[in-house]
Length: 96
Image (cartoon, rainbow, N blue to C red; front, side, top):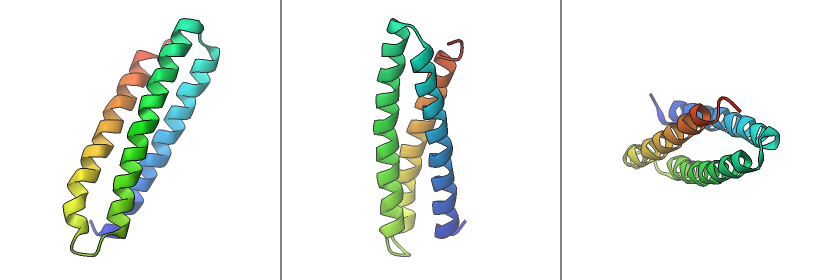
């Protein structure tokens, strides 16, 4: 996979995850007070992780042709972190 394909793939994942966070926000609006607090806390953590992932993707975009491969591992770690956290949050609040 070349850099442009990688960037496009990761950008698509971020867009998909943004949609999932929006679904969680909608659940928070329908939830009771305690659940709403929990979901809101998870959303804040997800946004923080998403910002880290976006920053790593931006680093890959800005890197030279040779350097982007080195940054790829950091970006993938950040993306795996948000994916795992999002999957956990979705599973945890699926009954709300």
